[in-house]
Structures are given as C-alpha cells and as structure tokens.
Image 1: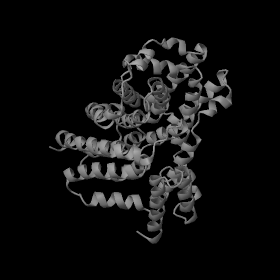
Image 2 (image 1 turned 120 degrees about the vertical axis):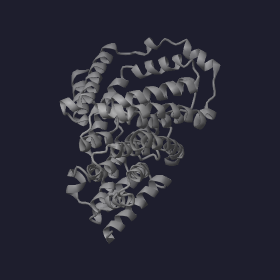
Image 3 (image 1 turned 90 degrees about the vertical axis):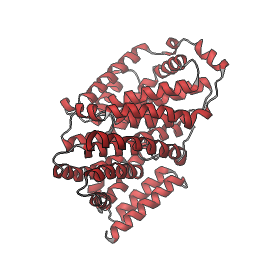
Image 4 (image 1 turned 135 degrees about the horizontal axis):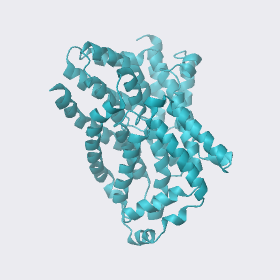
Length: 427
C-alpha cells in the first residue's frame, strides 16, 4: 500500500477509536473522519457523493428517511401503545417471555422486510411495553437489533448485503430461502438461548405491574382509527413493494419515499409532526461513515485486505470458504457490511467462476457479512438505528455495552455456520 493508503487507515482507526471510546459524539467523530478523508484526497467529492461503491449509499439514507417518516405518522395513531399492551399480555407480564416474543417477531419481520425497517417499527413498541412493566429496555433493544440481522440473513430482501450478492451472483429470492433460511432458523433457536444466558439476570418479574397490564384493554390505546387504517394501507403497499423488488425493480429507498410522501400528503398529519420522529443524527452518522469507508475503498485498502485473505487460501475450496466466512465476519464488524460486500463481491465472483460455479462461496460471504454485523455497534445499519433511537428516548446504549454482547453472538453463530457450510457444500 502507498503512503495515502496508510494515512487513510490511520484516519479511519482514529475516528473508529473515538466512536468506540465515546470521547466525542459518534456523529462528530464520523463527520470529522469524513472531512479529513476528503482533505487528504483519500476520496473526492465525486466519489463521496456519486460513486456506487465508494460513496454515500443514498439508497440506505433515503430508505431510513422514508421509513422514519412513516413510523412518525403511525405513532400518532396509538398503534404502538396497542402493540405494547398486546405483547405484554401475551407474555403474561414476564420480561423474558416478552423478550422471546419480540425477538421472534423482529426476526420474522426482518426476513420479509429489511432489518432497518423492522427495528424502526419495533423499537417504539419496546419502549412502551418496558415502561408498562418497569423493566430496562436496553437488553430488549440490543437483542432486537441482533435478531434483525440474523433474521434478515434468511432472504434476498432481508439485509442490504444480500441484494448486492444476489445481483453479482445471479441468485434468486428462492435461492436464499433454500440455502440461507434453514440455518437461520437454527441460529434463531440458539440466539434465544443466548439471550437467556446474557440477559436473564437483568429481569425482575413484578406481579403487581403484570396484573395492572393484564387488566388493560389494548383497543382503548387507538386514538385515530381513520389515520391508522390509512397508515397501515400505505405500510402494506410499501412492504409488498419491498418483497416484489425482483419483479417491480423499484429500489427500497424509492418505495419508502413514495410511501412517506403519499402518507403525509393524504392525511391530516402536519409535516412537522411527521418529520419530528426522523433520527437526523443517525442519518448524518451514516453519511460520515460511508465517506470514511469510501476513502479505504478508493485507496485500495479494503481490496488489499480482501485479496490477501483470498490469496492465502487459493486453490483450496475448503480453506477459501472457511476463510471467507471468517474474514467477512471480522471485517463486517469493523466497517459497515454494505460497502464491504460491494467491494468483496467482484472477487468472489471470479473465485466462483474459477471453481466451476460453486455457490458455497456466495453463502459464506452472505453469512459472514450478515452475522458479522452483530459484532459491534457500527457493524450493521440496524445497530446504528437502534442506538440512535435509544439515545433519543433517554436510554443511551454505549458502543461497548452493545459490542460485549455482539462479540459473543457473532462468535457463536459464525462457529455454527462453519460446519453447516462444510457438511452441505464441501464434504
């Protein structure tokens, strides 16, 4: 690597250290790192703002913006209070039962939608139900973010890296269902057990609180039925368009913005109300992070790292597959898994062609990137969104508070995937 590449690595590591140690606000660290990357010409304005592989991923930014507006309108109807009471009553007021219920709902929804949309919808419910039961929402939010990343791995539309992999590898929605979904079901069962081990000691059952919740009528929480039906109709259309992406060819960001625009224009909700729920610091943080990672892409750092990992196992499909799984998990924990997969997928495409079209490498890349995103607070978009929502609601989750659990979950899930890939594709 040349001097500029080493300098860009130093800038990235410095910014990442500030984010991890929380010496300065993560938005300031990301913007500062992005500014220095531009200042030293590791990347430029054209690459930062217009490059598909090395710039700000506007699809992610505007997908988040559109869904945040839709969630803002939904919040005005009282539907989140309704869902909170319903979930608490189904769990009989017992916190761990409630966590299992919310985690399974999150994972299932993330397979049908994208994981970011899911956490945007489930987080407000979590705060409300935890308030009702007087329990700490932090373990619930951490578990939901991780469940969204695991569940999202099951389908083509569940996690943005899967869309990139499908495009490069010529893979279909059904390919992901056949090859990814069975193992995801196993991983979710294991994850529920891990939640018991990691968070079980934090829960305290309060019979009085539980009794008061059981006496509530969730239907009374709905404050505007007309707005609720309008919002649900728009949300259903948005979800359908997400699932039908291979047929309609509308990007999720376009669908989300169209849904948000229709909802604000066709209802009596004021624009200011709808925009009040937008997590602007989260959007700015993503923009800064994308520019920083783009500097690593433009200077060849990520390709150099990926190429070295591939070269170390060339000609040995077993080592290549396992090495790709491990390297993808490790690198996706450090940089966002979207730009990592965008950089790595052309290399994997060449390896697959050289190996006679063996698709095990695609599944290794998908599992590694999707599950590796759980390792740190900035490894996946869903994690960053959850941290932003938590801070907004007065219960901030620190980088290490998330990461100390994320490392355990990633280590266990990736370790379980290794024998699955070996037995199904390599034995």
